[in-house]
Length: 115
Length: 111
Image (cartoon, rainbow over the protein chains, first blue to last red):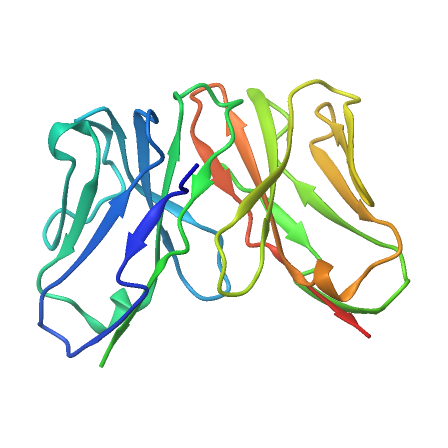
């Protein structure tokens, strides 16, 4: 079974440039998460989808960040314009449902460096 | 604000040593506690999901215990091997089902 696939693995951009990350969850997983992981900290939730609906985006900085999950399968996270402080690892995860006891399946992450 | 703390932040042990680390979380509104292992250049993988006070789970040389009344979980590794080197993350799940991650414990096992 294929795992959660993310791309790109690494991205280096200059500040004020746009960037987009893509995630393909495990087939059949209707819950998809985007997490932000800053150096030395734990992953923090940016947005959670149930199918194509964003049900928790309270931590998403909506002035520069946007996300979509068309057709309830793969998802894209965009930053425009990027700032120096956005340098971090962006993790995508999926789960069968949103139950609290279900393990999260993570991708390998997209590491962003903003110069 | 829900606070999940892990200690130590990092540690180095010799191959063959046993080690343990702690995850502290709020003792109220507990729903579940997850442990994940995150090896460098790989994706985090689930080790355990624990829900009941007094739970003990084991997978090979790794085991975990849970105390929901006092708000902590221990992860134990017996006879550490170099391949155990990773960051170990715990995630507290409150009644809202939101996963709150700790900052992780970075383990380095020296051959």
